[in-house]
Length: 102
Image (cartoon, rainbow, N blue to C red; front, side, top):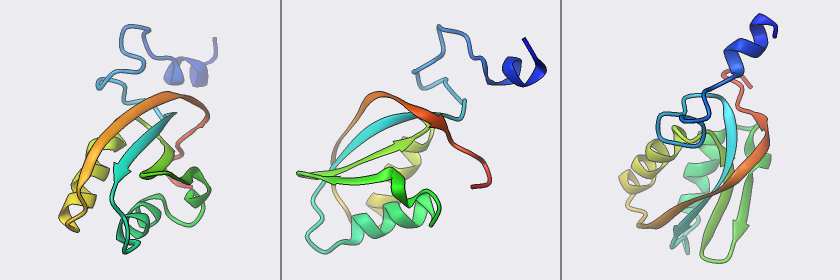
């Protein structure tokens, strides 16, 4: 195991939980009402230009690939702009990692 591998390896008991502060990506579904397009704008601004490809519009909301620790922050940003978040569901682990500097 190289030093790079040891930095990205997280204990199995933590992986996929709220204690997972890795850069591993997980697909999340955010159920929101977005007739005005504000929620999409908030999510795109958070993701930035290079990560905007991680956002998928689906019925009743959006799916996006983000690290687990980003979900609460996105909920705060959406509610700050008066967007009701009806549910957030972590779906599955995605390929790739979140880079601190895209």
